[in-house]
Each structure stands twice: as structure tokens, then as C-alpha cells.
Image (cartoon, rainbow over all chains, first blue to last red; front, side, top):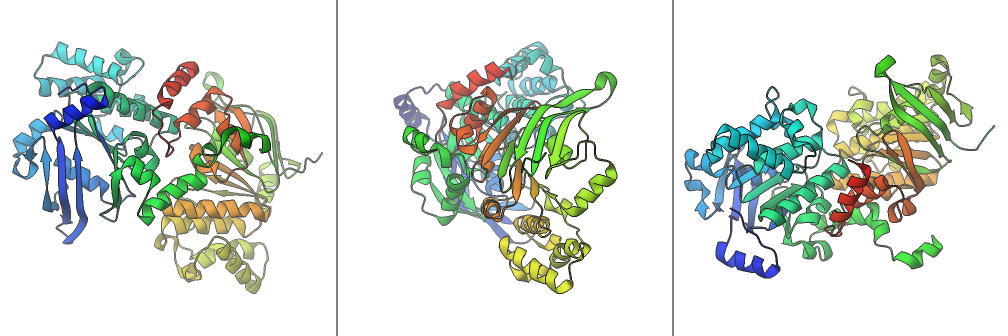
Length: 293
Length: 275
């Protein structure tokens, strides 16, 4: 689906007509082996072109929540209460076949370690082309052409060369671009980026975040951005959920969470940046300070 | 000649490989560290920051340039001289993952006491020192009997810092000391590092992330493709970065301020640097 929401007014209109792509309601997830609940009630709505961020340490339940929305919970985990609706359909009613149709074309994802999602013995381009052939039911030549177009769309500087390269020949930033290209190959409405920039250098991380922002603007892609870093989430998101030990301890519009945090954990995340981050200097009044510095 | 500095690196060049594969990883690097100063060394993958640290520790040899440690020229020191220098404990090194620098079979108490006993300090005096340094890194004395594997990542990193401190080195090189920690522990370790400055020890804080050193460094040095492209007071480097790469670093570091306006700037800087 493509949706060009350019002005806030257009976005409002889009919202009212299209509604929620992903509706997560009071979702609790239990580990059936230990019989312990590990996610204790998560709710959020995602509409076209919007970005929801989930912040938390490892073990906070952020990744498990995303996997639930993708229908790829590990075997022994189960949604015990609450509902997830994907494009208007309750996912608990989806058959395996229906899931296969939805994944890639409605909801898609990229994770932290891009290399492990690619076959090391096949060049990266044909792997994307195959996704396109299967999902879009097109021929070889069309698949290749679309794959090249995608590699260009994710701002790889030499798409033809990258197409025939193997995963091990590419840097982490390039691999993540390839994975994003594969993830958006079947024009999904939703992309989940789970710690997708965590292993990358800061300048490369910024490139990938810029790319996601661009895809959102250009194609109306809705994003779920998951990170341990509140600042990464703050760059992109309209709404933020702060998770800790399986609980959503704070949730609200990004501005509100950043400027009026209610929970002490959110305050800690903010204090870290203000005391030790660049904010310490960037927030100083400009010129008057320079004279004394 | 004595500069009074703990470290003086001048025009350092380091090559790896031989013949046609000879590859210059550091090119004309000059950096000094004054007593009690914290220098943040920033560089991304392949910038040469680890090579610089290894050169200062005597683990790789420069092909040109000089390294003075506490006034002593070590550029051409023999392995035995390096050994003696390490034994004196002038420079200490703290890894990103403290499991690598702590013996898994030694309790916290043993880990902290060992370097003192090796230096001929009596048992009771050593015990007193261990208590003192444990307080300095804000670790609970109940943890003394634990093994590294029984500590959280943040506790382990604080033990590693305490261990590097007990023998009163002049310089500690910390390689990404907070990258593997969660927020609460990161704040704690950063607070400790900041406090250490007051004790007169010098620190080189290596990181790929400008954001994580901004709050503790007096000066920031930026390594890019084997060259130091910018060195200056932390405030100046962050507020008025000069080199295009430093500007890209500053505008790429995630902050709590909205950065959508920086997107065009970043794109322009990338074009300029041709990356």
C-alpha cells in the first residue's frame, strides 16, 4: 500500500479513513515452560506513516512484544490475554498460510544482526529478487530490476556491484541497508526495526535512521522502532513506550515523555543524556557562554 | 626533556602488514595527556583508535614517531623494558568486557589484593587499600567474596576499574568501558570516572560514541582514517566542531533534541567526506 501523507491535514484524513494498521490491546505474554508472565499488558496503535518507539533494556519485553506482532513468538511463549489486530484482523485467527501472505507484504522487520538473516553462500541481490518473485509473482528479470531499484532506494551508492556481492563482503551498515531493502521489497505497510542500528557506528546509525525517516515520508511506511537508547527513539517517533521488566512504565507522545517524564526510570534515561551526553553542551545558552568558556 | 605530561605521543606512525600489503593505520598522530586529565579518544571502526592504545601499551611498535610515558622515551624500548614498565604499573588498561580482564576463578577480594601483594605490600595494609578503592567505585563490601561470574555487568566493570586503580597508576586507558552496560550502570560508571579525575589519575576514554564521553572528558580527540583530525576542549569540539568528520559525528550522535533538521546537513557532510 502506498499512501502519500504530506501535510498534517492529509495525515489526519488518512487516519480517519484507513484507521489502525496495527492495534495492540492489553497484551500479556507468558513463558509456558516456567509459567511466568513476561509481558504484562502492552497497548498501542499504529496508523499509516506514524512511528511508535519502544525503549527498554534487554529483558524488558520489547523484542517479545514485537515478535508477537509478527506472529513469530518462540514456541513456548503464548499471548495469554489481550489482542493484536493486524490490518483489521485478529492475529489469533490467522492460519499459517494467511500469516505467510501477511508477512513481508503487510508487516515486515529488521533486526540487530543483519548478516544472520542472509544466506552466506548466495550473493545478496538474488536473495532480494527471490523475495520479490515470490511475493509479487513476477518473473526473473522483473525481480532483478525491482531489487536493483530497492538497493538504490536504500541509498547504496553502487547497487549493481552490491547486487552480486556476498554478505561477508559488505560492511555492517551496507548489510543493514540490504536487509531493509529486502524487508520493504513487497511494499509492507509496517516495518518493525528492532535494535536495527545498535551494532553500527554512530554515523552509520544516523544514516539508517535518516533512511527510515525518508521511507516514512516517501512511502507512508508505518514504523515500530525498538531501541535501548531513548535518544534513538526520540529522533523518529511520534509516540514512545518505555518498558521495564515486562511493564510499560511510561507511554505518551514523544514530546510529553521527553519533557514531562512521570516515571523515575524514564527520568534516569533522560538524566543520563543530560548529565553525560552532548545535551550537556548543546543545551547551554550559545553566545553569552562563549565569552566565559 | 620533561614535559610534565603523563603521555606524549609525537608524529606516531604505525603500519600493519608487509610489502605490497603494508597498510598505514596511524599517520602522524600527536597527542599529550596531562596529569589528572581525561581525554576522550573518539573513533569509529577502522579509525585506528585501538592501534593507538596498543602502541601506548607497547603491544605494537610504531614505524616512526616517539612515545614518552611519564617523560621516559619508550619508542624503542625492548620487551624487557616494557615488562618492567608494566610491572611498575604506570599505565593500566580496562577492557570493554571486564570478563576479559578479571580472572574468573578469583574472588573480588583476591582480584583486588593480588596486584598489591605482588608489589610487596603487607596483607593488612592491602586489605585497608582494597576497602578504600571499593568505596571509591561505590561497590558493596558484601561483594568481596563473589566471583566475577556472580556479579552484574556494571559491578564487574567497577571491579575492573578498582583493580586498575589499586596500584596507583598515572594513566588508565579505558576501551569502551560503558558500551556493554545498561543505562543505570552506565550512569554509575560514568559518575565514578568523573570523580577519578579529582584523584589526579589521567584517563584516556576510548569510544566510538561522542555522546558517551562528552560528560566526562576534559578534551576530545577525534581519530578518522588513522589521523587525528581534531583535538580540543570537549565543549569546543561539541559546540564548534571544525573538521567535516567531527561535524558529522556531532550531528549523528543521537540526542533527546529533535534532529530532523540535521538530515540535510548530515547528507551534505557525507557528500563532502565522500562516505
